[in-house]
Amino acid sequence: MSQAKPLIFLNFLAILLLLGSAPGYAASHTKAHAKATKAAKTPAKAKDASVADATDAAANGVADDADTTLGDADFNPSDPPRQIRVLVALGASTFFFQHGRPHGVEYSMLQEFETWLNRSRGKNGTPIKFTYLPVDAGELLPQLRAGKGDLAAGLIPASAGLNQLAATSTPYLKDTWCVVQPKGAASLSDWSALSGHALMQPPASYARRVVTPDVKVQLQEAGIGTTAESILGELKDDQATLASRYITKLWSKRFAQMQVDACAPDAVEYVWAMPQDKPVWQTQVNQFLAAKGDGLANRALAGTQRYITKDSDGHVSSPEQLSSMDKLGFFAPMFQLVATANNMDWLLLAAIGQKETSLNPVVRTKGGPTGLMQINPLTARKMGVTNPHDNQQNVTAAARYLGYLRDMFTSPSIRPDDQMAFMIAAYNAGEGRIQQLRKKAAAQGLDPDKWNGNVEKVARQSVGTHLLAYVNSVGRIYSSYQSASKVASAPEVAERDEMGSKETTGAWGAKPKR
View 1: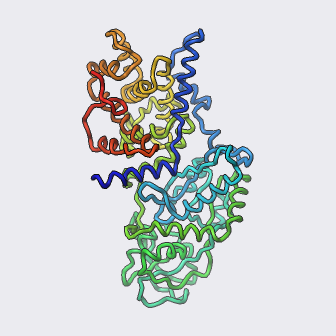
View 2 (view 1 turned 180 degrees about the vertical axis):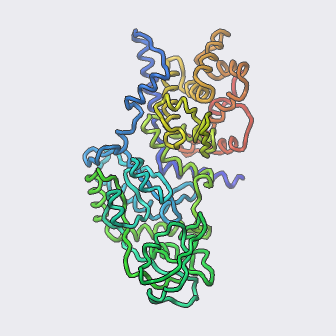
């Protein structure tokens, strides 16, 4: 166990270094506290916080991400958005996680694009950051057309039909598809000799479009969950498949038993897809691809090949099957996107998600808390969210609700740690219950603006230890995330929490005062 802890820490630190630890909450909290202090010195008519206020703010775009991402606007090179939402196909070659960090040929190329966009931003310019949204390859175009992303990538073959659905880039790779057999099989050196053979293919394979009408082959569909890469690694003596030459090169070191034979006569070109109403953005994409040329895809192949190890089997894990570290890497872009739009620290959202569901979305369509953040549908609607079962909308509702709670507990007499404890407690028990506990604390001569040893004491008497355990647990996870971002060894605190530690401690790890 002791040897695993440094690895866990380094993996989490890698995610933080890759994505950045957005200081949104810290900055907004400091400003809010200063604003409250100033307001206390200036006579003004008091206004009670309410859910209606938060609803109005959401409706008026206070929590919107229009200034953060492209949204409905086209790309403006002189005033670009802070974030570009990239829909990327989750796959064993295109985009995958290893120890919490993303890799893949598309990821490698997109990272070059991000660097290229920032080439002239200067030291004082806000950098453009890509937010990766991994989806199933079949969801790339539907999600793009639904406005969920600004760019779609996933070795997408160019076609006339695709141009009817989305704007496309110039091709960045010209590929061929070839017959692959186990090494030592009778060679099929001529494409026409393929007639009469059976080819094992994954579901919905592009191979069906590659096979020319003059070649009569039997395409055998492998089971659900099978990938082109996994078939390459599992070919038996009497089996063959049709695969991308680019992919076979990528996996040639891992699956050395492959024998690449005859290739289809027609080339397949791969493109990126974009919304049809953003011609300037399309021009930016094409200018980048023209500047990089054929070397772009080759560099991506070489760079990705280093992360295809002896443990890589070509299969793709769904979000539910990912390790806890890879889950954080999977959901972190969404947490960051929502947190930036709502002036919140994404690490706090991640900590609550970890506590609520271990980052496993639990959807309840018949009422009750639902989704990644276990938000109540009624609360979600009051926060301006219509579908709390969708992951991003679920996190958005949670972020807006936390923002509303932050405003509620902003006062010159409430210290930052106490404010955070009140926010987390109210997220779990409701703001009405926490306000009642504060009133009881005042009636008992305790400080209603302090959690530890004051409102916490009343909560223990009135509610029980489960609320305290929730506040303390989220606090420990959040503190460990923050400490990791400062290159400290605190993730073992989160590890104790995940193992089910029942010890009741203070909000940020300190023992409560009794």
